[in-house]
Length: 528
Image (tube, rainbow, N blue to C red):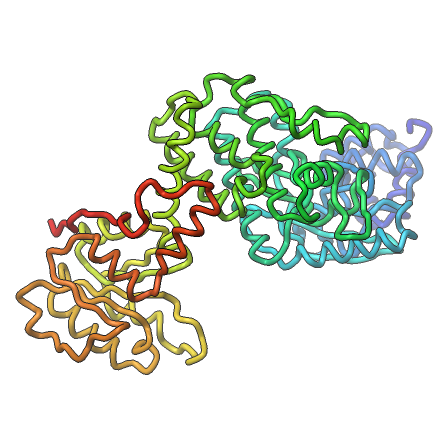
């Protein structure tokens, strides 16, 4: 490198298109001037002014003239490299945006299968927009090299983080897994499964948020097998699916390897023995001989052990069935640990807890996917109903302004789904205003079809007309116990508790300890 003069190096920079003649002349002048600036002084001035990076300077000095631009993106430096692609930090030449750009290696540029898979998977992931998935914003080709552009995440991947910290604190590990499960659940809702869950495919931002990368791109990793009966899969996935005798591409495989990641985070030890030998990675023994997590960390809280066991159950019917359920279970365990439930694992309690847990999840599943709008100005009533409805899995929207609440239904097409599944008008704080707005709600051409509950005090029920109520309308009198609100919602929203009970039994492997139909809360809504 030192054999070059400053002027020769400046010419190379110009030939690569990285700087204009004018900018080069200014920097040369600041370094001492043409014929006087030393090579080292020129390099130092380029770095000081942040006109070039060390990576660019090193490549230019080695005589590399290409690989600095892909479309409008200027490569700044290498972030990471794999068998099939390299990832760089890049700058947009017009907007100045900073992104990560993943480029298929040169040697695969003429491999049509690899090129097509790279493009197809990248375009598929472009549909995903979730805070726990690194988004892809652009896919392109430049001089035969295919690339994709994604958000640049300041931080490190989870594998590096675990390697540096060994064992990760329980709460941190649970929060990371919650984020991962959230991303998986969103993707699964779009019909996309990761199929290559591992620590290196999770990025941790500087704020500690976990983000999934390489959705679908695992199909071009170095250890693939494809027997023509489905999509490509990693050797680890192939081994698991053969061992458990499920159809390939089983969505529950992502759940198993999510459990593996949590296992390694809380113990510092990978659950599956690591080897590069293909046949050993495919062997059923690799999955059947996973050591109990308590062998490595005997003081783990009971709830974490149960969670890991459920995520990694080799019986596909007993394993957590979906990423959405995994997210709910992780959230429940995290909440319990945060509140101080740290009792150590007790094997004798696990069967009893399976029943208790199934009852808990029954409650959480009752309102899942349904939104309730509460129109009530009394803060105490708001808080009471919000907490209890959220315990049942409902999404709860609250406003003390009836007009603002009904604005949600303005300008809706008759064929458009309602923004909420049920509206509760409460007179605890609104008084008779709740009744007048309820009547207005009934008169709307769109809102007349939306289920609604009117909650009134005894003094106001004389203002209510009985013809307002039918299979979609109900009235309750204050004071009211929450179990009556719960049962009314079940009726109005056609929640089939027998079907829910059967689903819980199938999903969690145990019948609820409390019959589903009796699983109602018996607490008064306090008016303060």
